[in-house]
Image (cartoon, rainbow, N blue to C red; front, side, top):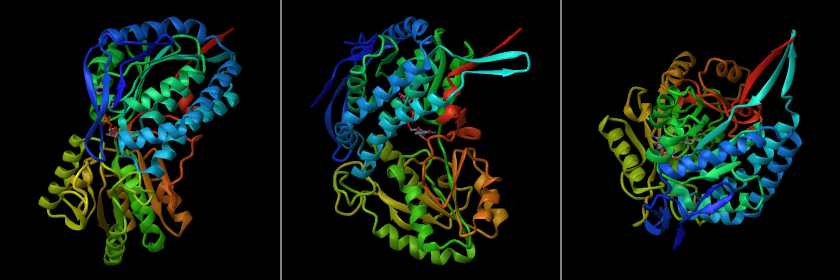
Length: 471
Ligand code: NAD
């Protein structure tokens, strides 16, 4: 059993003032695997005050010093990659291939930030002005459970690269990952208070961080509902706020696409991270004249997708993170059936041969209209909708007819056509015939998928304020 009874403030592991014990679970068998003692409001305030004190010195460090820190932090996370992979499997249920990618990602984001920082010019001259990019102040970094270690490291990397200090509030459901990351980063020996990690509830620790006058910046990844609350809470002190929220990403399969490659890629986009991905391609838009062909291929391929034991390398879909999340996804499957969508694969209940754990049958609905609930709301599970379209204009209208705008996918054998279409899609990222990630390119959403961008220079500048000095 994991017993995690300390938080990290001012360079030290301390017992929280908060006393609530929160159970941690293995979602693959629904067994309790330990407890984390949660921080409370007073702990959050102590962390802010440590970060504020550290900011004076840290904001004046040179680029070279911070590049060195980031490289050492990268090396420290690399050293715990194996341990982190195990924790991600046990506590979150990611299939082993995904979990090991996630652990590597937690390390690589630190190195990526070091590279961006090395190349970044903090001063430029515009007319008679000297414009300097100045670290914004103490940053609050709030992360969700669906890639906790990666979000902690990614947000912290950008904040420290900028010269900010940070208070991190990770998801309370990811405490073993957080504890591994904290111990590794502690070994780097950053000045006390530069980063602080307080695992606690959103309503307590999160609420302090989004209202505290000494927090200048909030970088939040999570649900759109909580993102809006944070924006409202931060308005009083005019915090700079980056929000990375939900999505309902379209996968546009054009009629010239080679379905033998397009369908596996579309399914991978839809079921990535067991469907618990903000960028999951959950609306598959297919030409009506090829619907029968698509349905046959999808049914055949989904039959071969394994949902089950995350430790088995043959598994590509793990359990949902919690019983609550399992119930939520089951409810959406029921809604899909009730609203008259055609159940092409999967359905309610547990996958065949599984009698414990929070598993979902990989589910695909077809002949879905874009007005159905399953096409409009983020399900955050392995449930996809196939929506037929008559022509490219209609496909584009459907793709953009969503409150979200995080990511879109285009699968086509005509690159020029795909690029022309990409320019008309309202989404922060459009992937053409690929599922690749580009850490130098900005990431973030249009519309209700968020505000601001992470990664690369855009992500760094989210922690900086421009100052013009004229003489
Ligand atoms: P969530 O919004 O419930 O929680 C996210 C974090 O916010 C947690 O640490 C939580 O404790 C904290 N929180 C909750 N209430 C708060 C409050 N009032 N004030 C401050 N903090 C508060 O989301 P979740 O269920 O952990 O994650 C799933 C959601 O995250 C999905 O909607 C998904 O789309 C989104 N997500 C977005 C991205 C992206 O980059 N756009 C990436 C991953 C997940």
